[in-house]
Image 1 (cartoon, rainbow, N blue to C red):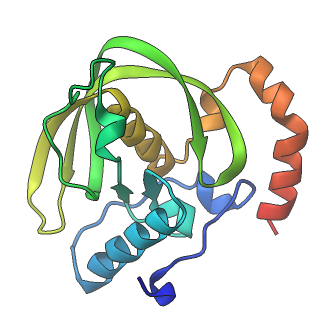
Image 2: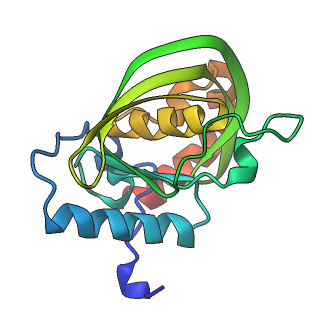
Length: 185
């Protein structure tokens, strides 16, 4: 893949990460190019999701690239119906969150080498548009639901550290301060 496709990541401290996204009214060549470049960037960084704010844009778009092996239960069965990856979500909205909440370690490309336990709903129902403009409503579970929630949080200006316990944020305070100093410049 050409390196000209790759976009620069934004890191904690960059104000764009706190900006809510603007709805995408028209899926034009710019949005199609943006989706392709975001996907290439996510893959190059070995991420499973990337939101527009993480590359300095405030358009309501995120890309998901969850490997099939991360969508399996303990018995090795798929948790969700097979979903073609990468999944591009335009103007995504969570309509409902249901089921048990579960806690799992999460990381974020905008927070290198920082992770923490985050509790999220196991099941969500979301609505989004695809690259053709068609609207979809889909219910997803487990890791796919977790990754989508993480990316939709980004689109709303919410960062995963906002969902960490107060104690964990205090423990990360020094690392976050160093990252903010480097990322916000």
